[in-house]
Length: 176
Image (cartoon, rainbow, N blue to C red):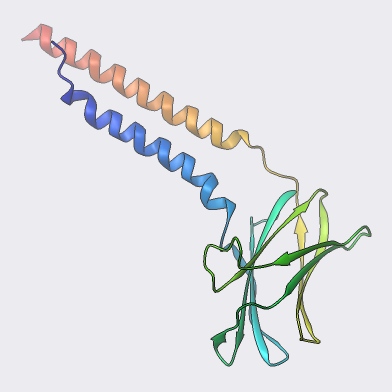
């Protein structure tokens, strides 16, 4: 008869590792990121901007914008994000809104960048004459096989550990 208690811990470990691997891509998708502007003055306001992924890669770029007036959060403003390639090319325009924000006190924007190079990110706030901006480099996307390779390596280690445990259990059982 098979004792299922011996399989609970390895199966639990496998399950937790699979959940962690799946969570990596979810966490990378939205929110936070690397700060590019922190409490920068913008007329009477202050603005903070975080960008994800970091370093920037070709594909979806996520911006989170925080806007404040006199240290209080400012909500429901029209915020426009302009992404301009410095080597020349068409400016990408998007809106930063609360709609898909993980925290409704922030504005979020997703922009698709299709080429590598140096880009200027400019944030315009409705009713404010000044703009906030920063320049960043966009690189080629890293190989997506890294996550798959890690998943396969962890799986292989767990399978080998299970086999070693079974062999040790058999040899101990036969020797007694």
